[in-house]
Image 1 (cartoon, rainbow, N blue to C red):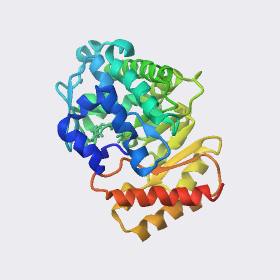
Image 2: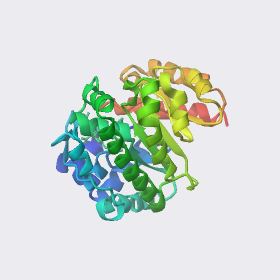
Image 3: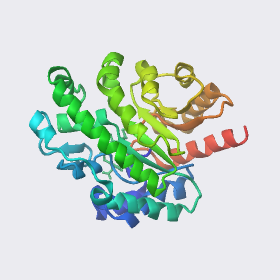
Length: 323
Ligand code: CP3
């Protein structure tokens, strides 16, 4: 979970010369940035350097990604007419640079570690489109969901079709796994998740059902809706730090893998704290196969690089020895 990879000085150097979107649209630069944490920290996978917002441009949405704020939409999509005018994504003409970045990154990785492709989940994308920017309470999103279900379902329908096509194009281009980012879905009740979100996340994942690559379903604040998320699909479920990992895994069932769940803030603590918290997670998962050790959400920009390095090394020492 390295989104906001600003904690790496090499990344900051590149960012001083190029905007985030510029990097994403330059396949060679994007590939270079994708492999940075593999080369510097020795992590076990690379994630495509893109942003969940990029494919929305192909659907006709205009946005900016502002430093320290995140995505900001020019005109929020809060009316039927605006949603109705969205087009369907055509990955080969709308995001050719993403497809090229995948082959460039695969070349640089040279089979050292797998490459993870990704897209935003319909709910999380819809929340940015409706609110216009990041929010705490998602009230405009919920208002539209409750009061104008026709517009809500049209928006979710369009987003899920486009994101399904987008993930499939990434799978065709050679990513080794995909991750569906539903970062903000934890603001919903399990019942609303079932009624307004589940069918659409399920649809996105169904586009790559026949591809033999793992699908990671990511969310935060989802402790109360893990069973519902499992119904939406995925081979791996990513959890944040608000639930002990063994409790979450028992709830999900051992027929799926689990990803998580260190609080990114732990990396602001000292070496002993980092070791203690990582040990707790590893103890809770035991020797059970199917655990991807990870942070529960994106790494914080103020993380000291040596703390991230200590964590990677510590997890390697304590998992490789376990065999
Ligand atoms: O992890 C990586 O570095 C790979 C590429 C990646 C980015 N965004 C680039 C980026 C990935 C996987 C994402 C996913 C993403 N983008 C999500 C889902 C994951 C999550 O963290 O919940 C979301 C919600 C977004 C939207 C978004 N874009 C946010 C919330 C931010 C951070 C705003 C901030 O400054 O705090 C962005 C900007 C962004 N996208 C950065 C990066 C590396 C920040 C650094 C920069 O501007 O250079």
